[in-house]
Image 1: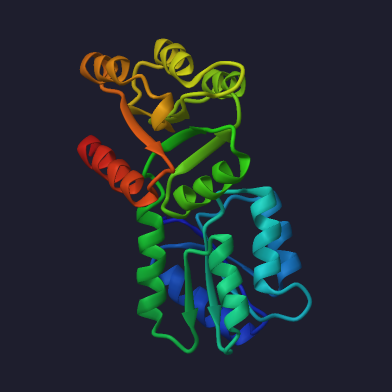
Image 2: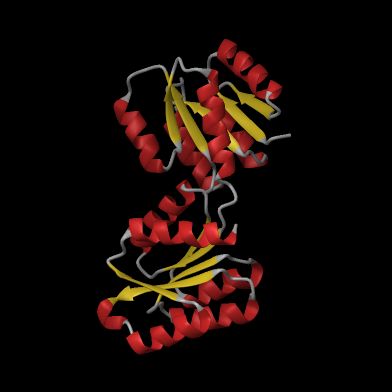
Length: 246
């Protein structure tokens, strides 16, 4: 089995035909005729990808996606629409939908999009710690949309708590985390987990102890990025780290 799909659409004929194609391709498929039913299924079952129509009676696709994210922040959703609903498409992408496909489309396009999402599933897990909750939420969304599993915290104590029950590939920590600072958190988690790929410490230029960080990089391989954070630089760095792993 390639994976489990949830197909959501109020068009029964579309659901039946799409399910047949996906099952022939080796996927296990569950269907839902509306948003409310789809949310209930996500609450009780695990799916690798949700393929969902945007414009449905009752709870529309975007509203359903928002509720799904409350249940599972890492839910992977591909949206489809036969209508010109630009505001809903924009809202879906802002919420983290991985793609919006315009109906009618070639089934091969949907299959390729699903395969791309499936390939992104195992990019690695990241512990993100920053006292700025708005920044933390936005950055976590960007990283999850690119296939990373992310746990976001706002102080060092909670970071240590997460690391005590879960292993991480990357530590992305603000230097001046409240309660326990980022450098201390890094050292303590490294003592717990010996297989961390990299630690990336972030802070404003005036907060950075350049000599200490050079030593940390030389002796332990830790990296440093300055605020305001350049997300393109960060994503390139993460891509390099995980490519080296593979």
